[in-house]
Amino acid sequence: MSTEKSLVVAYYKFVDLPDFEARKEPLLKVCEDNGVKGTILLAREGINSTMAGPEAGVEAVLDYLQNDPAIGELVVKRSWADECPFYRMKVRLKQEIVRLGLPEVNPNDQVGEYISPEKWNELISDPDVILVDTRNDYEYEIGTFKGAIDPKTKSFREFPEYVRKELADKKDKKVAMFCTGGIRCEKSTSYLLKEGFEKVYHLEGGILNYLEKVNPEESLWEGDCFVFDNRVAVDHSLKKGDYEMCRACRHALTEEDLKSEKFVEGTSCPHCFDTLSEEQRQRAAERQKQVEISKALGRKHIGATQLEREQWRDMKLKQREEASRKSGGCCES
Image (cartoon, rainbow, N blue to C red; front, side, top):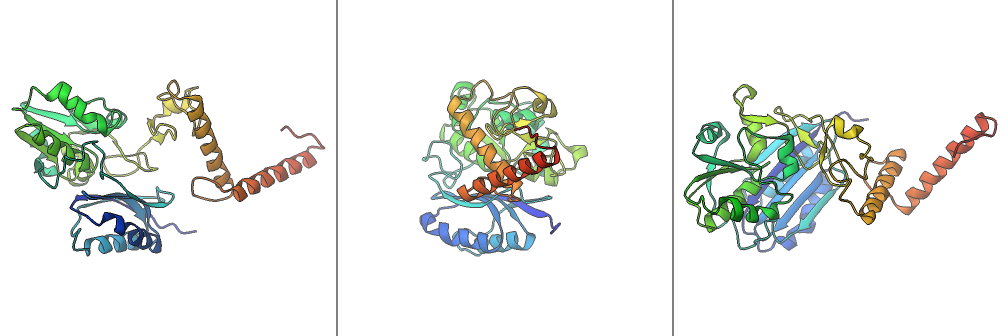
């Protein structure tokens, strides 16, 4: 069995792609031909992706994209995982590559001032700067920059409402924002400028770029960084953190969460147990059952075909029959 590590890359670019729909199938084929998995979002406003696979395959896909005159050079954040953190490759067509819910806000028109990781500490140490974490509450919870404000949003679409309620009277202040890879804070700066804010800054390349470029001894980052793949979070060295993920609500789970009676693998956790409907619980339980079927059959992907479910049932039946034979006819069902 191969022990080759998986190269994980995150990148995005706001660039006008009027023919984005026609790009889906050719791009998907290039990824599949090179053994690359993950998600690529395409929209009129640009491209956004996290993907992983063998180093040569990932680099081949990046070369394909960057040799496209419409896309050109990409800023790519690289890290490594012991195994591919994705199950399949998806190329999706969207109205926005990061959904703010305001298509008229386009970073291709205007954005705030980019601040490099090397100069970020100086900026956010200024007491006159309002430092805002543009990510969701569950991301903020496991790590953020010292002194950063948590908008308490559960999705990026809630961010404009936070701005209207909490920042509308601060349009003359310096506002610095950050997110995981740079895409949300870049769109946030475009939105703030459109709303009349005067001095808007954002961390170039996001948290991942900062963790790569800034020594831990000089860092103002506290905790781990949530990532949207099976690693759940990465530490300051961009290595997998000590968190698991709730498959029902995607919340990062601590060791204490895993011991809670409200944690049911693949179905619920202490963060979502009281909010799930019965229908949601049943869907989550069925999904978890399919995961277990695939694991039992030595498959890595999520979900199971009807044939796989039948194979799984046959396998369990044989196990029970064998146990019954060895125990003299008594088998607990």
